Length: 343
Image 1 (cartoon, helix red, strand yellow):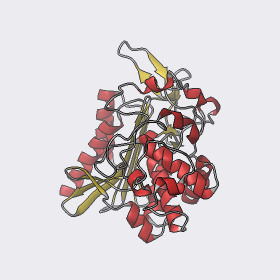
Image 2 (cartoon, helix red, strand yellow):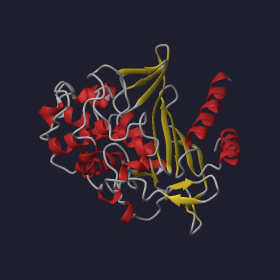
Image 3 (cartoon, helix red, strand yellow):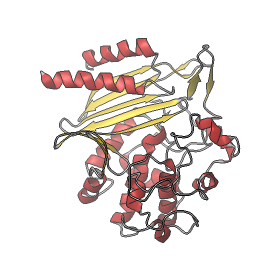
Image 4 (spheres, one colour):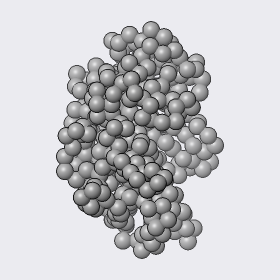
């Protein structure tokens, strides 16, 4: 175990009360595996390496891999219009929206949770109770009859609704429920034996409950803050080790052939400065060099970061069952890794 990085994580944790797991592998060599806080505060069950955490939008990578698999099999095209791939009526969506636009957040379609308009994710469930949101079609009333937000291909605008639509495309093209597809075609192939899409009211063992902390010291779980079951825009549960397995399977072309892996990892859209977006994945560059591929996710009671560093094959996973904290740990790890490279 790398003592320096572990000490840095411990220092950050003492300042922000990080609750979760930090896990780093270099090839097959385990460098860091540390956990803090409680998976269940009421029962004082501690987080550990085998704990399963919600990862929110970190799941968009799974959806993108599924779409790429179906394109590789000839069942879809990245240039296919949404109307060609989905037998659902969207009266106000531009007919020029393609699979590529949805994958890269450049479709311009309305989002069901627009961070520019809404501050509180829980506002969504006032008229549409979260316990009714159990499959992808349950999300449609939240945005199906809304007008376009911007012109197709005009700009990058992070969009959860776009990934709901991609999940519906996966269902129609494969004939499987979305979560069944991901568990069978991605989790099983990658050896992610502890990962899955679990409903809040029927959780299996070793789940980290998500906690929302109030300024007065009180707290609540996130069971009434999120859909009853996650889907194609987020909501799966994984262990840190399983996320490492996902990186290995992706980079070793077990999930997609080399050409489609490269397509997924291409810098399709400039977001800002040296930050780009591929298909369901963030990409950080310095000049022409890829510094890291990474995914992240934030929900009430969830914060998550994970990265693959191509120059060293390092895989870093930071899972937390609190609304914030994972980014601080991830930044500290990266700073320590930068020092190692400099030396």
